[in-house]
Image (cartoon, rainbow, N blue to C red):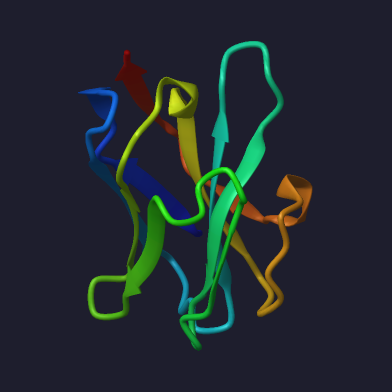
Length: 124
């Protein structure tokens, strides 16, 4: 059974930084894509970033490019999202997701497993 457990959310002022983590268990993830999505109140879930676990190649939404960095630690089976220069519009619940494929996609319903989410609030 795949489990994804996020941590690292919190309250931060605009311009600040946070690092989210997603501890993955239950599988060998070398043939997976790991993604981060977010959902703000009243809005649809949106893609943030993804990483191909084996190759380490990454892809970002335009809204976070240059500010956020996704990475993975093979030894710890953990995926990270480093978020810098945070803006109030980054406020959302952030979800980690895993896809049984090596093809990166931004479509949420193509991901097979999800974490419970972690709240990120950016104050102005």
